[in-house]
Length: 581
Image (cartoon, rainbow, N blue to C red; front, side):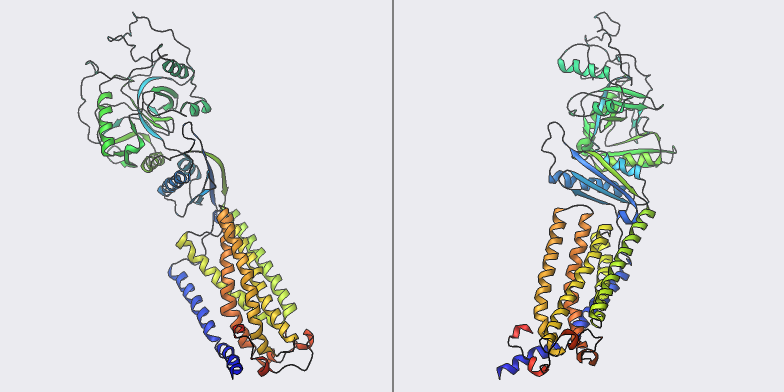
């Protein structure tokens, strides 16, 4: 009595294949409805397909910061760069790490790539330094040390603030990135004292012609500095500690380079709470406004109060960004929590500087390794080529299935269609959900998945044909072949998914798109085979065309080499192992 009961359990279970079909139909309808509800009818395309710019940045070591390149600082840099790019009004930009030292920035089409490159590549190490000396930007001939009787001897016996070879007029200001003019508070107060009054103690002074080795080295570097040379400008601003005097370069309003000796930094970028470029309606000019933190406001008020009592150029306050003097305005009054930089800003330059200052400095210095720009036309051509390759691959698979499996090819084609619908809708929904972008490697992964999915059908069909070769009729052959095919399909898909998962973890950038798509389609292959292919095969096995082994069904016993007499379905439908159901 036990054997008949075991035989009925699989039969009963397979008498309701419609449940599985209804389940997968509900899933397809839900995903399609979600796609329309989200307003995302197509998958979001990556830079290589939609067009845009890819920028690769590499972190570099700085003296005394050999251990600064770590996961925490890299992630912090990613967040700052992402906020900067988004501050440009860019949507759907991608910023991610690549390995231990690289950051990849993908900016979609429609963005000024030059502007974006300045934003992402700027370290934004901001310091406010008092100006000690200003001179023309070219190399300066060494001057003899001033004698004690020189007219520029100060009362306290220290050299006065004269530059080594001339200085600009008291009204001269410098600019970089189209930044010039005076630094002032929105509601200025009268000057703290008359410029003719004695200078308070602690007034910054230019480097003397003689003294400590560090001072002599600074003066020699200042005299030799050629600001018209880009490499020299960059080298001058590198490896300088905020607590030490520095030299730097900047451009004046006429576009001419000038060089500076600057005192130690007294305010830094961390003291800026917010900054933005905006249009001053009253004056009809673009300005950059800055709001300081509480501690920053106190430091800013102290240094500007002191500088406002000095004469040019020592009443100038240099704003140094990444070693370059972007502005050195004169201070006319003590400032507090709010300040503005005014001058010949354009809208773009004002907003750029405000955006950079607002989101702070990067914790690391970066070098631009490569910039790749893909036009929308080129991206469209790549997408078209990928789709053509996928269509050719799909057509070859279908031709093979029809030629070899005949009627069974109908089940395989329907299964591929279901898999395609699920894959497409999920990719479309993953765009707004997790930022998934379909790039060219991802398209390649989808093409490879066609072969993986077709392989699952072939495994099942061959198991069924093996059962028919042994003399069983179709309906029991379908049920007996399933447990064996199921194990093989699961093992095969597990290996494919494991390979995709490992590839996704160990790689970065666009290769992850290939791995993600391959893993997704592998999971969907299991879903489709269990919830669609097997139930449909069970239903079609009841149709005369397949059950009687029509020559075009792909299940003709004679073509498969089965030897009569065939076993009866009732006798074969009672498997000895209940697990085989």
